[in-house]
Image (cartoon, rainbow, N blue to C red; front, side, top):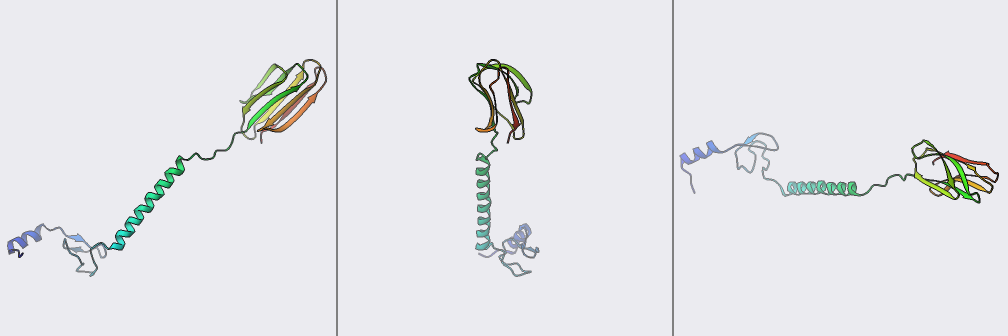
Length: 166
């Protein structure tokens, strides 16, 4: 189909020039080869394939990153401290360093136990005075491992244990 000179003039005045991606020169819209550098202006199959592959890699990275952030990350375990009194004594007067770092005094029955979480390096302390005759054993353990143990068999004797949480 042949265009009249008026149609051709109208088409050339309305056609938008495009820029060659290789040499950055203006070329007519619809051209398949740049008139300046003589390179093809049509996207190559290799270029499309690389673009798809790149998009796939970015998508895969985003999915893996999301899954990794949704997974619970291993957090350092906060140690469990246990103060305990055992023995044949019936009661003891105790002084302890509590979970907030303060000091508390109580009269407690034997056997007795108190547990709380403490950070590494925290100072822990238990002092127990026997209120009658019999054996009184004071112990501090951290995650089930004995930190320190002391015993008294004297009436009004004191068993004191202390240390730092490891």
